[in-house]
Length: 199
Picture 1 (cartoon, rainbow, N blue to C red):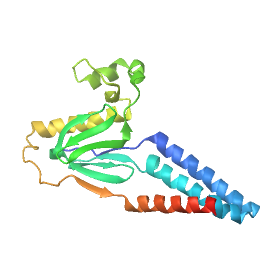
Picture 2 (cartoon, rainbow, N blue to C red):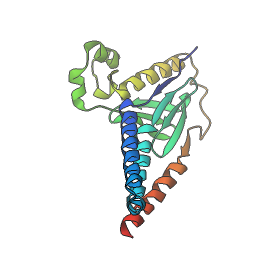
Picture 3 (cartoon, helix red, strand yellow):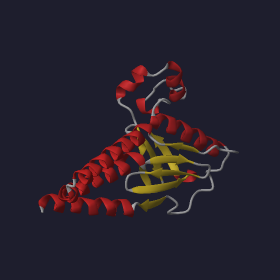
């Protein structure tokens, strides 16, 4: 069975990240052009902290669905989930994978508000319901969580029907890698921001 890898990255978050980075760049350049190096030292750290926070929250998060595993890149960690480790898929608050290694929510695939179902096309709702008649807003294919859940459920079902999930998994196969550089950068810039304003 061939499976086409799919990636989910919120477009709005990436656009917002670029806008914030451009604004901060102009702000820092303004201090330099005005010759206000004291202001640059005092307030530049906070501006850089804003860029790093926005990058971590809105640019970096993603959900990559591949043939052998799902990679969930959140704000502070990246989790790799092999298909046999998945037990259930939910979209109540965000795309959430219930696995043998715990519950994993995808920051890049949040569920929409409850009013999204009123604006959904009938075909969208019909596909999302899987014939059950009940459609949760987070399952709608026009939403980030719904599109991702649809792709994951379909491939997970195919693997299950082909008996490829019966082999089980090795303990600890759900791997979590912490984003230490991001955490250290945020902490360092936060301290520098406080010191710059206080001194």
